[in-house]
Length: 430
Image (cartoon, rainbow, N blue to C red; front, side):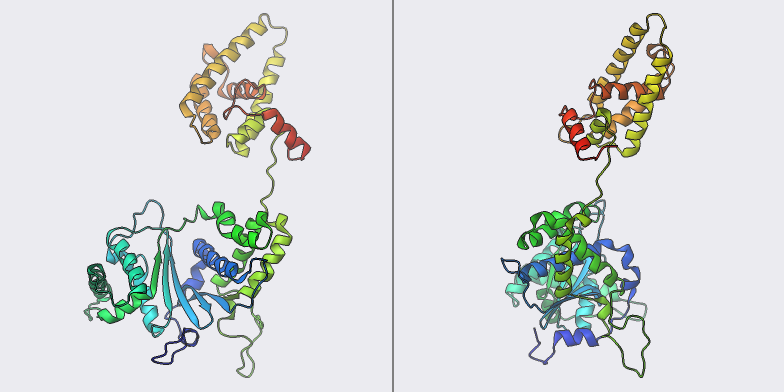
């Protein structure tokens, strides 16, 4: 996209205009979420560059990380600067003009758009959500893209609200703040999109392979390789977010004033590089899969793992189960031992039953909660005559022994024996 009025090429403007700061590249390792969202953009462009048979076309697409904004998309002669703002779930949506401008980064986007001679498109991506004036701003952007001269009352309200917000946010002791004409602000909004419902950083790792990687993997005929596609592409983006991507000259000094690389080479990524990495990844998809979890080869461990208990809890439970067995073996020959053992099992079963009713949740994994609840209840019972004076650890060992003998569960009932044999056959049990 070239500005015909002034004969401006957005790509040339982007490259020759120095950004006012470069803090992003220095702190990008704190913003993994931004790297993940830039990766999603790259995969979207790569998906469009593949035909239905998975052949890669000659597409002029580049992403430039941490230059003017968090990342810049360049395709042909068109540019789009993107600001990524992550907000935690505990923080409310952007609801005022001031929040959208300051916390949402829309003011920074506007100032960069002006410095780049109003040539790029702009995009704000965030997890924060929008409401009230924030939501109204997004809707006006959408409206002005299709009807740039609209006189809708919401358009006029948003322009007025943003004008006042920019003036207040840029005011100093010696300045009354930046005055922005309605015409300029209208043009900026028409060039801007706001995507405010992106997944949070704690959600992306679990869904990225399926949501962002799988469409590409399917087009390449390997739908099971979505996770490999995602991780291979993310690995290309991360160093470029720190201006540490590969360059032709590496760290060689500049001799006679002739640079080895273009200024932005360490921040740029082309689709050709993505294509190479993705095809290698799907050919070696197993290398990108998470390491298999080794589960102790007994029924208790299988049930606890299925219920969501940690490996440390399972190890502790197994050790206490063995100690519980040793305790009863040491008492062989004691009169009425079988009666005492039966009474103990009855008490343990009652406590397990009551604890299960306390923590069980339909449709969720509640095994870890049950383990914690049993631990607390047995601490309270420690030394009591009902449990024959045993300590809490031995009582937990007794509960684990009942689980191993299929007398108690950490989930709703399932074929634990079948799963155990499967793990043994696959050598996933220890």
